[in-house]
Length: 291
Image 1 (cartoon, rainbow, N blue to C red):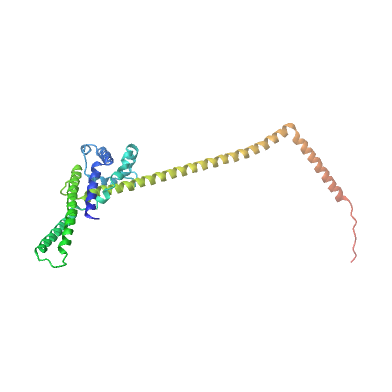
Image 2 (cartoon, helix red, strand yellow):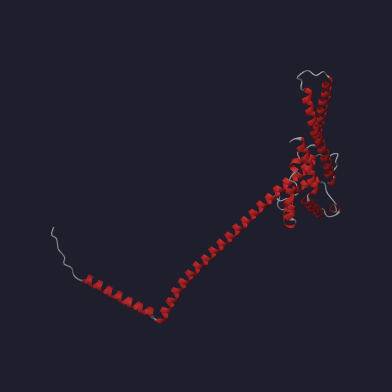
């Protein structure tokens, strides 16, 4: 990125953290959480260091180690303060601002300033010399310095504005302007935004898994209930058939019909046996063979 782009990133990032209503609301919720969890002497804080933001993801549940305070914080925010979901949109300039180190940037700008002054000195020296025919150094360099001076003046103005806004943002969050660099300051927010994005996705994944488990449990319960109904239906059918046969037998005994059927069957059996004995008692012709 060019120097103007880097300075613009610092300026935009500083404005973002100063003006973001979503960030302000989120920090209020974080402070409330901290005071609730630290009841007593440590539970009456009026603020906290912004570096504490990234410790939220390290505070894990005692029941499930995969769930952190950040997961719960996002769940509460989504339900109670849905406007905070615009956080990433309002802080979209933070990632670029987190790449800038003001000290290194100022060194580079000072180098450019020194280089431009050196060129101006050389130009003044060449102007004092006798100009040779066809030598375009003075005209070309003069034009370059004019354009470069205007551009560099814009960079210096942008640097001053960026430094003022950044200093205001750092003081707004109670940090030391002499120790806090843009890459560190904005890096804290950038890391937190990434953690929020990951935690939101993990919450969504957990929600989907829970819904899938509940759906599977409902299907298993329905299948179990269906099988139980089918089992009861088969049992009722079998019991009904046995009961029906028994009822038919009792009815036949009561009416005497069973005896009529048995007597008829007995007569048929006696007649068949008599016929068989008669046939076996008849003499059959025997042919004798002489050997």
